[in-house]
Image (cartoon, rainbow, N blue to C red; front, top):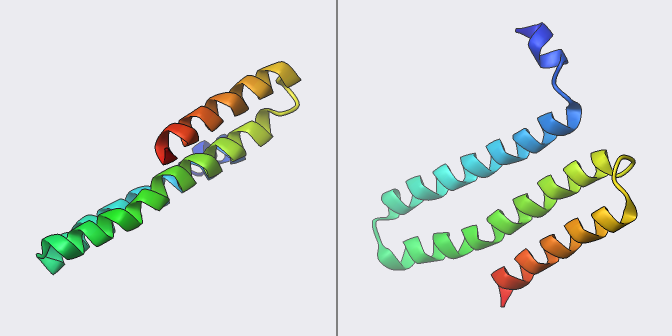
Length: 93
């Protein structure tokens, strides 16, 4: 098992770790909703989660792009940045 963990790229490990943290937050929010058993409080918890998703996506994309920055041309990095910008624009508008 230790040999397998050493062979994983540190960037991939960080990206997967961010997704695990996100999953833990989502699961905790679901349990809070069940614990509160109130629609208004559940909506408040759900509203707080609206920040988590895009933040985790931006952080994981940044980690991945930083690890690939030396392998991609500037035009391809620009296209990726444009795609991320369009996703964020669609989320927030």
